[in-house]
Length: 457
Ligand SMILES: C[S@@+](CC[C@H](N)C(=O)[O-])C[C@H]1O[C@@H](n2cnc3c(N)ncnc32)[C@H](O)[C@@H]1O
Picture (cartoon, rainbow, N blue to C red):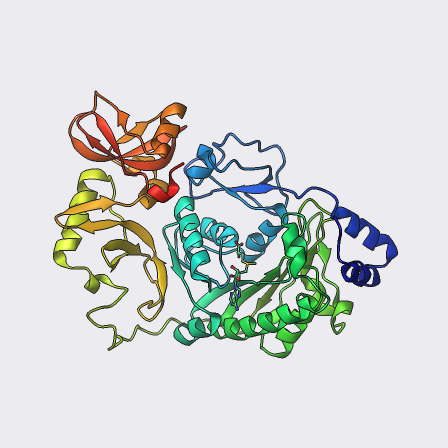
């Protein structure tokens, strides 16, 4: 790979001749692929991918390449994520019941990690500034089957205005100069110049300034990049220490991890508590991760104030859903599901969602996905959402239909399936290799295809 001359010179000066040689040579090696299993699934290891090469710092992580059309991927049993990116979720260590923000979240690698660790308890707000990318994030959250995720589309400053001190944990996986992406995406190199890290750093300071406003006292902030530039890594953390009450909470080292380099910033020793993953020292593209905590103890959240503007047309809250609409959903759920789902019904247009319990007030936010998508409210009829296929367990459906590999392909093409022995009309969960991947509509022996057009092959 032809690296920019300035890049070579910069890292030769920083690392010294010998280490720089190994580092720069790593760019001639192929990129590493990895994936994570989904702890939200009933039997997460039930996948056809090899689990022979676990990633030591990522409890559900393995080395290997995912096929996007395979049932493991389509059913949300696995998420493709290169090994070193998995350290971020591991360090964040999100807990069930927490209120968590992933501020720069698309396409969702870290958010799916956090959601898996939270076990559908608590609330994860996954925010993405770019609407197109926020929609991709929404569909990855859907495939992963997480039920407690609210996907928003905001710049950090406008989010901070609405959600001050709202989160126990905030992840800032910052937009960066992406020096760890060059192997995966050589085009990323075309943006690079000697000045590029400094311009990325300006944006990172803006993002962090807003992020810390949203952190509760006692909360944790995790900052990460996929670049090696000290301007965006150690120097950014030194700046944050000077501009906040946060302090670094050192990351315990495991094989392959290196300490961050205080001497590449202002030399303060605590910066060594952050971690660098280098491509010449471990299997992965490279990352910088730093965990910081805010002093204090979080107080109980203040009771929600009713917002005058949003009353009546509230985006969040049961009040937005009429009694008839609620009945449509409840009738469908009673006929097709074995368990009641908890949360607050909310709607966007004719789309019905289940907002997780204890969700922050989202009525002032631009929301792409307010929790679990339940389905579409039609006139006198409820159409279940595809999300239910990946978010619910097979035993939560009254009727599941196992399909073979050919039928799996056919259904994903948009074809109907035949089951002459099944009578009546109902919704069914379709499974392949015991994994729910789609909802179908049974009408007297025929399973009509309601697979979303955007997901068809
Ligand atoms: C490194 S990527 C995030 C990757 C993601 N966390 C994952 O694991 O899949 C950074 C994200 O920040 C977003 N971004 C760009 N400018 C931003 C800004 N000024 N404020 C917040 N986010 C921004 C980008 O659109 C991008 O999706």
